[in-house]
Every structure is written in structure tokens, then in C-alpha cells.
Amino acid sequence: MTTATTNEVLATATATGKTKLHGWEFFRSIGSPKYVCAPMVDGSELPFRMLTRKYGVTLAYTPMLHSKNFMEDPKYRKEFFTTCTEDKPVFAQFCANNPEILLAAAKHVEAYVDAVDINFGCPQHIAKRGHYGSFLLEEPDLVCSLVNILHENLSVPVTAKIRLLPSLEKTIELALKIQAAGASILTVHGRTKEQKKQFSGLANWDAIRAIREKLSIPVIANGNIRCFADVEECLRYTGCCAVMSAEGLLANPALFDGTNIAPDPLDITLEYFEFCKKYPVNDGLAKGHFFWQVNPTGILAENVDIREKLHHAQNMAEMLDLLNQLKERRRLGIKVLGEKALKEEEEKEK
Image (tube, rainbow, N blue to C red; front, side):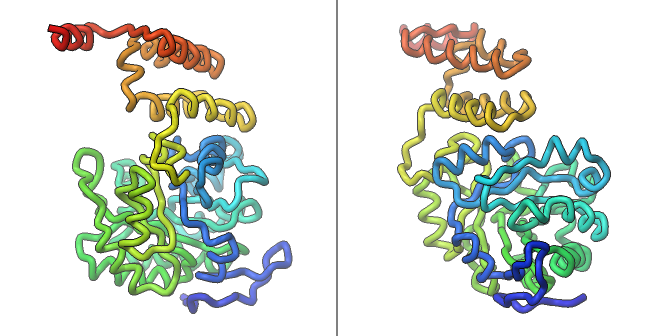
């Protein structure tokens, strides 16, 4: 395996005649982006990426793409990979466990993205069954072969996203190997693969900082980002060049706007629908964003009939109608509570 020196400018020419940049040179060439939209299955599709860019995101990732499906199925490629000229810079993320299949898949997107990222962070059971994501972290030879084949054969840089191993020393050792294999940027989610769902706990910024101090390529911090104050503190504490958010952005697409004030959830959902008109997506994805952006505010709990109708909505027009109904009810102060919530309200009034 051929290794790379960080911050070098590779002599390999791309299809457009440009030189392939690496490490910090590459990072600076895309504007040194500080605010990053994470790769999210059913979450970071084009209209959502464009919405977050409107509110401060300076680098966005596609949803995770399955390399074998992407290599083999044109319909899968058409449905799950979309971009536009304004969607820059953008990294396409793949999960994989076979270097040749990964390379074949990545070749389909290299002309349309700024880099190709490899997912070594997914902790879900489906990743365990599929032998990808964070379940490869204890197979450093395979991890490095996946990174290196893209580094050696793509016209754009390769990046990687990892979680922590139980041992910080082992994590640093792996990060250094990923860097040596040719990664231009490393994103570190400060949790282990066991820290998920109700067991997620706080991300370990100390570990992220320790990894960043050992590497000579840019490191992006991921974890514990719920508001812009968290962004600023994470950058300060870890010393990383950028911060990535996933769930925080789903709940508040304007998280990176610098205000620490969440926008009106109904208004920003309406903005998301406007982007969906321009960049059409599966209606199920749009419905997911409706729930993510509105449900945490309690508005749907106060309008259970609309919540039920939203579950059964078949298209964007129906969802838009329900959104406008919520806006009108809020203006008029109308609530339609479920039986449980109604009893709670009655108890409060006693």
C-alpha cells in the first residue's frame, strides 16, 4: 500500500485538468468550511442541504450511500444521489467493506462532488449485519485499504468519518493509519459504537482533541452540538477546524446561523417545502423533516388530529395543507388535544 504525505499537492491530474489537492491544501481550497451538515440516511438529501446552507452551513454531506447498490443499480443512483451547482462544497459518503466495489461506486460521483467520504461511524444493527460503518473499526487493514484505493484512483480527495474505540490509544493509532492511507480530512464522532440511542451519553471532546493533536490533516468534531453556543465551545475546546451536526440540524436547520435563536418551526418547515419544489424528493423524506422540525416543539401533541393525518399524508400538497392548518390554529389559539393530554390540561387547571 502506498501512503501519502499530509499537505502535499499530488501530481495526479483530474479529468478537468486540475491538480488533486490533499489535506490542508484541499481544505483551504474549498473555503475552510467550519459549519458542517452531517451525512444522514433519510436526512441530508439535497433540499435539506440547501436549506441548511441558507442558514450558515458551509460544507454538506450526502446521505450515506451503499456502495454495492450504487455500483449496480442505476435507479438507486438516480434516487439517492442528487446535487446541483449551488450545492458546494459537497462530499458524497459511502459505506463499504470491499475496496474494488467502493471504487467502482465512487467513480460514478467523482465528477460531481468535492470529495468522497467513507463511513466508519454507523453504529446501527444494520451496519453490523452488513459489515460496514463502525463495525470495521477493529479491522485496520480493511479500513486502510478502503481509504487507499480511493486515494490512489480518484480525481478528488478521500475523507473518512469514525467513532471512538474503547481505547483512546487504539483510536489514535487507527486515525494515524487512516491519515497515512491517504485521507485528506478525518471527522471524529466522540462516542463509541455502543453509545447510541438511549445509551448515547455525552460525546467525548477530550478524545477528539487528543486525536486532533496527533494528526496533521484537518479534523472535524462531531457530537454534543445542539445550538450555536455548543459550536463555538466545541471549536474552542477541541481546537478542530470545523464542527459537524446531525440531530441538532434536523431539529433546527438554522443551527449554524450564529444567533442561538431557533427559527419558527412551522415557517422553516415551509421553507424546506419550497426547496422540495425546486429539488423534488421522495414524499416520505419530506414527511420525516416535517416531524423532526415540528414535533419537538409540542405543536403536534397539541393537535393530535393533524398529527394523525400527517402520518397518513400521501403527498406534498397534503402535508402543506396540514402545515397551513397548524399555522392558522396557532394564530387563533386553537388546540385539539388527545385524551391523555386533555386530562393533563384539566389537572393543571385544578
